[in-house]
Image 1 (cartoon, rainbow, N blue to C red):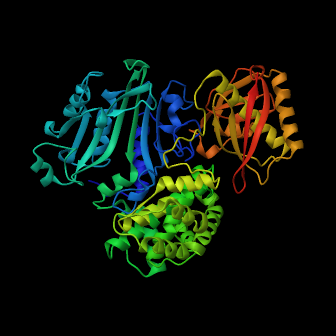
Image 2 (cartoon, rainbow, N blue to C red):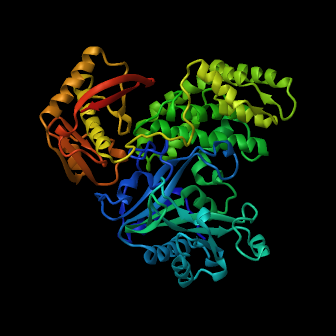
Image 3 (spheres, rainbow, N blue to C red):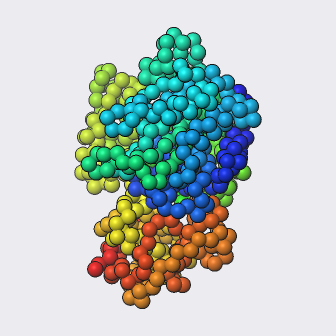
Length: 600
């Protein structure tokens, strides 16, 4: 088994699949563009959903990438040996090209070949779909693994709950997957007498890779039909793989965090690993500062706020501050830890270097804001719990008071309560929140339609109108305006953009006039594929760092609007109807929101 650095592993993976005919595409933004299901890009497949559904990708049918991801559903678990909120997913994709007969041997080659990871075959266990009344047992995958050399007793079959992907909604593409695990505790695995992934003690097996085979379409009546375009979607967690290859017990002990650990040690005088409590605090700070660095430094950069992604960012920064204080991390130190992260990833994600000043500024502002009230809030919390016994409940009004007055996200109050054997009256908190007419937060995995809710005709028309709105805002307000997010349903569009104030009534009227003028002219919407460099030269706008390779799709509406985009569009503007701005809102400092409709 090879000992690799994070830089080497990334390149080894990409070059392996490039040798198999794949085009290397860059990571997309952490903010989903056309996925209406999550706040963040949580898997490598999210940016590629339109292509998995049949749309042609500019780079072809074989792709490979390293995708930035954020998952915050297990944020309270961060501090153990494996949970991270930010991670990198190594992936490769077949869009209607190769399938199981190619992918499984390639997976085996990359895992076991001395030219790549060099993992002993006897240390590899795999799982396949066990079959049910809907779909047959995936004996084909199991047979391919046997043919490659995986020991028959190391092949394990699981039901849909363990070895099935999708569909993303009620209906759509789905299929069996096969997972690759490393046997980390041979004695315990042998004691079980079989490779029992459900009942084995934690740490016996560790999943390293997952190959998903999209070969069915689930219909509205619950039937599973064979797909016309069968896809392969794979994912290998970079941090977890590094941990295994280098014989580490924790992802935090890989080269990714070395410099950050050294920085925290120098700032606090404490040592990573000196005891369980200190180790947990180190890990929370390490993970949360890295995640915050990538969120703020993203090409669609997030800033702390009380809504949506900004709320999650605020929550993780404040959690990092709380745990940092537990080990004596001085105020203002988060930006110094972030600097080690920027430096570590400088050659891989250049947007971090480009946006480094903003990263440090936002971290310092949020840390300062929370530090002013942190100790006061903790004292108030201690007062509230002093009269409670184990198993008691903190009043919802008090939880809201800690949030409203001292800046404690309710999740932090809940975490502090758990540490003392208490709970929080969350319903009471929510009622108090509503009573004060505050905006409710978006949970870490709550639906947030950053792109199109569907591909219906009216949704598509509103998407086309969003292009016109973007262009009109640039002409009326500032050429520096850029999209910061969008949410498009069949009823309305929502467009977030960087701007310091709301539009005046005169500006609103002029934006509407320009857009309706383009609609009245019935201008054709023209799509062309070209290289990224050609698109830049021809004046197409786009978040260039987050697109999918050297060839992109461009959409022009006369000379009025020219954008790089991958979503569906109306064929000509005359289909849209009359454009009307319905509402303006503040999203966060420097980010405004427009909601608009099309009237037939």
